[in-house]
Figure 1 (cartoon, rainbow, N blue to C red):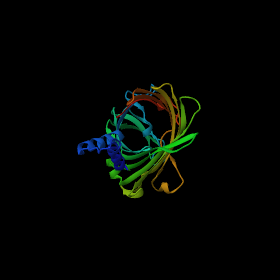
Figure 2: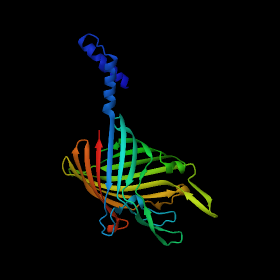
Figure 3: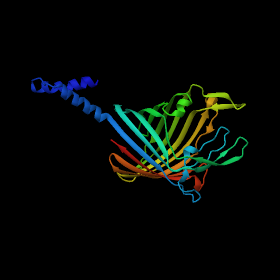
Figure 4: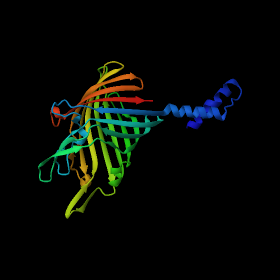
Length: 316
């Protein structure tokens, strides 16, 4: 289709003025490159996970939702963690008015050593003195397809991101992860109040391993390995656009998971803590925005389970 459009642009002027128009190969290349550039996007985002509101947290220690959830024996895990910087790079290309493809890379850096956390032993006793180290860790890279207009009417609209996860981390390769699939739909409800936005969000992610559930001998004992195979999340959001630069946002997040062959059943376990996030966004420039968030674990209400964060996003 692009070739026909290009031919139309080149030859119509010749028909209008009664003589042919000659376009050099160099000019054709410039037109093509300009078209590609106009549909290509580059973005970078960074978020600093800062302190908790609890006075009992030590220097550099905070609450990190992604360290919570449940262990192999369904015991709650401790969210105590170091302050952290999360970064992501994304390159995308718009293939249709409502569809963009992209490739994303993300990683995180923990900033403080020797952050202590608790864990539960086999017999139910609590183990203390465990520490988390300052280090960089990577996430699997993803190929994304973002569809902005799946359905819409006078009352609501539906959009979603779809992804294919590539096993690029050492852990995924050691675990023999073949690939992962997922989607993150957003159902927006149009508001009659100017500036107000609200709706529902969710996600479903399925990981496919060579062996997702198996037993093996470990020091005379029979141990079981069950990889996390399915994650499902739902939530709600509410936003208010104060002016063309400043907006306020609130979001509730809840999710569950399945491990190993549990994916073949209707049984689910609790994945991460349920949290409420509130905070402002500010548009410094059309391509640059900053945000602040206060996160509170509603499933485990406590000052210890709170965290403040700051974010920045740059797009080109």
